[in-house]
Image (cartoon, rainbow, N blue to C red; front, side, top):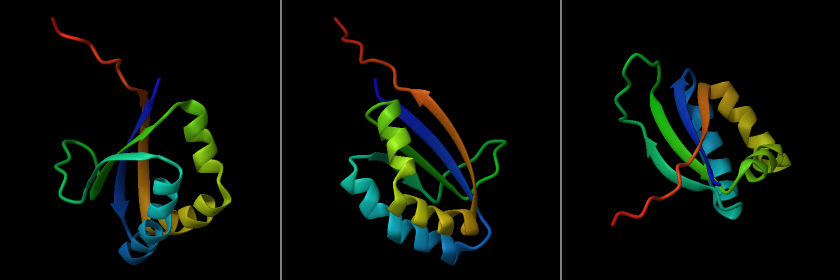
Length: 99
């Protein structure tokens, strides 16, 4: 079952975060991570944040292996230098067929 990752980013060095996006986007694409949402105009209710992202991974191993990739780890250094990230991982609900 696929896993979703809801992420909020609170920027403190936007140029570092932008470098992360530049480096990580091709990795997300190459590794088959589905970027379901990516919004710097998201409205946050009682949460700090400047950007919201929703990612979908095939399963837990896909997510674990993705974040362990050396090229992603190198990109993530820019993410960490540029923003405070808050993440929530949860399972996608199975599709229900309506009659």
